[in-house]
Amino acid sequence: PTGVSTPTPTPGPIAKGDADCSGGIDTGDVLVILLAFSGIDGDNSGDCPTVTSGIAGAIEVGDIDCDGNVDTVDALYIMRFLAGLEILLPSGCSAIGQTDA
Image (cartoon, rainbow, N blue to C red):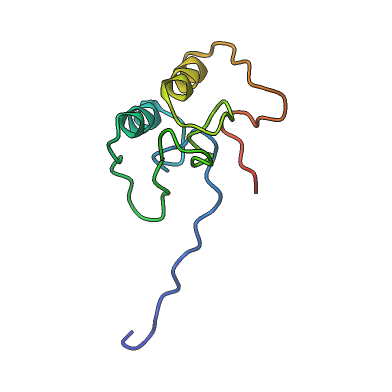
């Protein structure tokens, strides 16, 4: 109907590792992290935060090892996760796929 506005949905929390905000952890997330590390902003759409490389306080969803940076090690952790391999993260660092909400 004319004159009726549709409310914009509020995005839910983004899972750790879902760097492309696709709703799941996959190789697209690895690509976004590697692009960020190379200094290229990934093509994230909508309300997805930009993953920032090499900056303290980097976007938490891409900082898998909680070291304050988004780098190739974070991409490696996601690849290990996808392969079903063991991932040893520092104490207090949330697991891939978790949200802090």
